[in-house]
Image 1: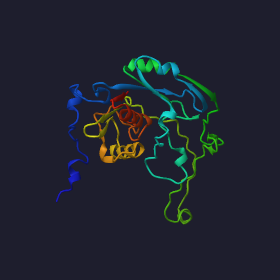
Image 2: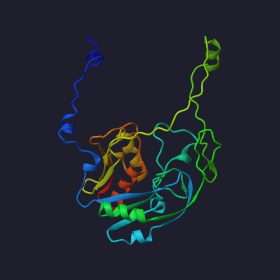
Image 3: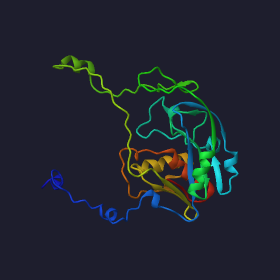
Image 4: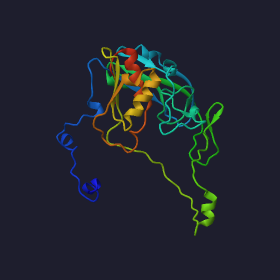
Length: 273
């Protein structure tokens, strides 16, 4: 019986997914909209390492057209996002919260979320929210002395060992051994399409829906269900076309959780692009 791989290995395979994209009929995250939706915009850290002393959002909350402004206190009931690949003892304290509290750990760390009737209003209001911070020295090299991740916890999270067999015996029996030092530059996936997420709660079916690009929809569904106290059967994820993956689609991000939490609380669709 011929191996099924003979149909594909070493052959030019006709692509079947291109027609809607070539005809301009692709449906990406930004193309998804619902009647009555709110628009979310995040206030982010501009520091790689800093203490967050205060947030002045009073004027933002009073702005006509602004539905709500959330800080960490408003989502204190939402647990941190778990690590996807595996549960490793000792790393729970290093999980990411959906909004930063007390400490800013990287440029872009979400600090506050603005929900408004119009995306441009949400952006303008977010830009006017003032953060008082105490900037701290950033760690720029992996071999620097560990800095402080948060009070009582250093940036040196731990050492993970995974091995099998007798390593020492293998080296002793080897014909030759090679030692080298490698330096790797900063790497980041930069797809053409930005990230985006749309949360919607269907009250008639009692189902929470999330629209957007995700390589791991089943893991994301289960994690969102745990974080928001729902059964996985009540969380539905819908993935459309993706304007590039490059690894960054394979995680659950704070924005994904925030639009879902907001859709549940406000009983309105919430869109973030």
